[in-house]
Length: 148
Image (tube, rainbow, N blue to C red; front, side):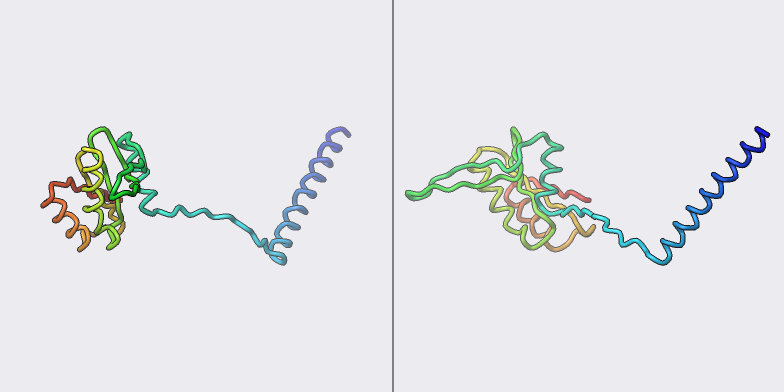
């Protein structure tokens, strides 16, 4: 008698479980979930790469340096600054062509050695990397190509 009661309880539990599975399948088929999954994308821009690069050196990111010209004052932000170097970082795009001028000016302001970091986003040593490297070499600026 006790054995039969236990079997009946287990059978009843199994029937409920089976019913719930069938109900779930039917509801899923006829009323599909409209999931609102939130996706986050990381914008891998120049700032993103500069942070990773500078952190790896233990440097300071976007340090401000003031300078005077005529009777006015302005400032520049250096992408990465360490004890001996100032770094200007840029993507492998046309917009990075002014990196040489910027880092040379940073070097003058701080008395530190200049270096350019170009972040290779397309896996190709292209025309902008080539141009920047050649000018950097001629001016004694360290050139670093960071491949992703």
